[in-house]
Image 1 (cartoon, protein in one colour):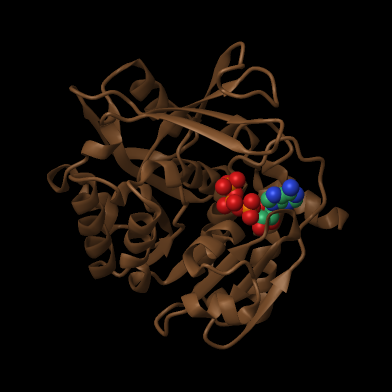
Image 2: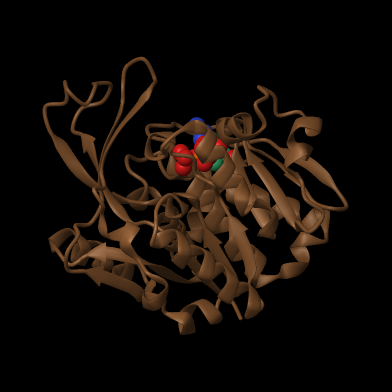
Length: 319
Ligand code: ATP
């Protein structure tokens, strides 16, 4: 069993043709397919793993284009449903010159929010070795119930559950609601990856020290990872903890780095689950994941920038 099933949203980011402008100033936009869970599925496939994506798209040009991108990248799309009444989600995203990311979402509601329990492809979910998800699919019904059901089915079928909360604050009614809902499924995961920004949001403390991170630890966890952007990552298991430096590269756009990291990590875990028990093995896996994250920052956009295994191995050799 080595299938990684990623559940959640797939959408189109519209990003400005020039950098460092506000959404209002942007002279034009280009399509950048995205959605963190979809990026993770493609990241897995790009490095030779088996991946499936489960979610809902609009039965429109953009939805069919996105399903085609999954297939072209070797991701099983048999868990994708299409909504005839709602559009594929769109987001306009820019990194302004002051370094702030500005988002504008078109989800009123979008197809991804309308996935129902009845539409879940249970055969795909039951064949998962790892079932991976975020938190955006928890925001509104009916997708929220479908998400919870899919987690339950995957767990009963013996999958490891992997959670990357992927905080998108503007999508939630309030920060309190976001925190509460993100944490409502916290204890059920086996593997969690948070960024330093999410750690601060969830703990209310501006620190990545062990005592702060460990407030998010639960006894049943197999692995908790905190990613630190260019500084690499920290890892925590029941038996050991530590950190790994990142790899210096010529960064142009960090979109998708976290997804590349997660895809690489999960791909290596399904290949050999003992990496969760043996620190030396886990460190090798996380070095590989750091390399995959780093490479993803060297090109614009998430999906085009996701590395192949040889590219990541090459970066590791150079260090
Ligand atoms: P995103 O939301 O942009 O996909 P994230 O915030 O979830 O990413 P990050 O911590 O930014 O996750 O990045 C994940 C991993 O990618 C890091 O642990 C690191 O290994 C690598 N990485 C990210 N940014 C850089 C960078 N500028 N230079 C080198 N490596 C990077």
